[in-house]
Image: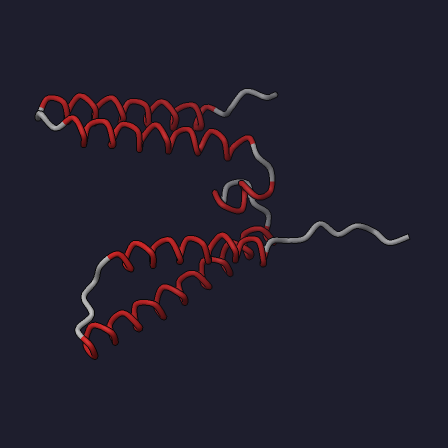
Length: 135
C-alpha cells in the first residue's frame, strides 16, 4: 500500500495535536468530561479521515477528495437533497412551535440524524453506478 501523502499525514498529526491540547486544557480547567470527549472527537475525526483515504469510490463521495465529475455531481445532488429536507423539517418545526407551542426537544437531535441519513441515502441513490458491459 502506498504511503499517505504529506498533507494527509500532516492533517492526522494536527488532529492528534488538537486532541492533546483539548485534553490538557480541559484537565487544567478541572473539567475531565469535556477534556476526554473533546480529545476523543479529534482522534475520531483523524481516524475517520485516515480510513476514508484508504477506501474507494464511496469514501471519495463522502469526502469529496479525488472525485471525478460524476462523483462530485452525486455529492452535490445529495447535499441539495439533504438541504431541502432540512428546510422542510425546519418549516414544520416552526409551524409546530407557532401553532401548538410545541417546544424544541429531542426531535431536534432526530432532525439532525434525519438530515445526515438523507445525505447518505442521497449519495447511494445518485452515485455513479458501475456499468457492466452486456455481451
